[in-house]
Image (cartoon, rainbow, N blue to C red; front, side, top):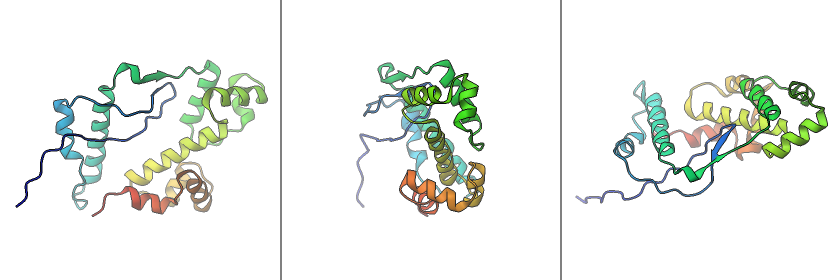
Length: 190
């Protein structure tokens, strides 16, 4: 019987999506705290027949990410500085992802003309308001596909798409694969 050596490195890749804070892209070496070492073995795929396996795996993965984020060096953090008008519009859009907002309505919320709002939003956020919102809707749908059992039709409705065909078309343009393929790829193998 062959014995395996203990792992000396562990790689974790994830993104953090926040309105105000983010981490500089890069590879960070974190000390292996007791909490981190204890979480690594419990984040492996479990028996999917167990009723609480998916929830348990999701919570353990989130705990692992939390421990990693807490160990990040302060120099890795960048603070996004959005103007109060743009931050208000972003919060409105994020809180109501299912509801489509016109640029006119968002500009009115920000107390700006439409052209000035779009120009400032794109300058600060790096994308026009509608694309920025769509990215959040697709990210929400991605989480639902990989961590839930709702049907694709239900996910399309919950994320504000008029029907499954439209949802699949937009999802594919962002993720380079359809929702069904994304779900199959992101679920642990049995």
